[in-house]
Length: 348
Image (tube, rainbow, N blue to C red; front, side, top):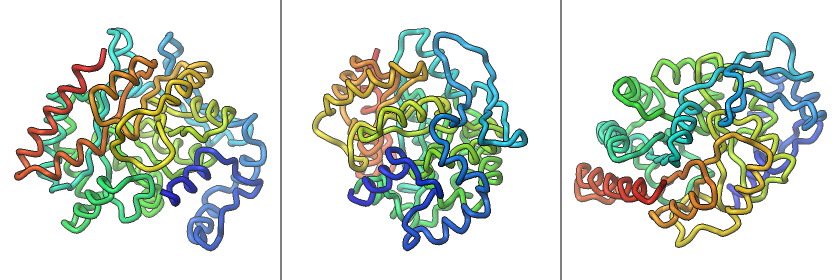
């Protein structure tokens, strides 16, 4: 938990120094890569937030369908046209019908990719409006014990990014629910942002969520995701200063992921009442849809968050736990379907 809190304070809450410096002891390789890939990083960080690049905003009140990503700190060649994607349209459709989005997370490859493929279809059939697929990673700083254990099991069974994308290629053509891939930054760096974005697009993915990428570096990744029709979803936390929260809200595509607590993922007995204030503050500065995650595990949690004004609720650990604890994979899927149906019934 301490590692996650420190990372999130750096990514979401703290502003990088003029040099974008982090602790070189733990970030030596990443800094070397950034030095080569982000020649504008020093100027960008020094001038933030007044000239922060603002990509397309999803306006539920109705706005132009396309806007350009521009900033005085980003050269003309880096400007990218960003159009509304499937995530944005999903929220617009739900909003028009007075509905709140149910977003369900599962870890790919746990207990195996065949079950993951079946579970994705079952999630949609049970009422999930958006499905989040976690790519297993060896150092999941944002995740609690349940999802960490799921990632470990998936990796031991040989699950890789390529095998996850191949599975998604098979399943996405039959889905109406958009797929969001949850991936740590290291996997993106290893493949290269452009190649990574192209691979997601080829697999039918609609969005990407990267919990450990600093806001100041999202403009580079967004060039490639937007060019390939992928919406880059950003996170804001209870410790995010108001000015930075507003900048994140403006930069996020598809929706804004509001982390409900300080800590890692995992079921909690109740949702902190501070979420109500966080939602209120966010809605003062953005019309973009806001989905609340971390700690939501019961229908009453979902109902409470929706009552406070959330446009979406995200459930992860409770679903992953059910899938992993069933006597058989099908038993796990059946238990997951019952939970999703109950959660959907609790929402407007």
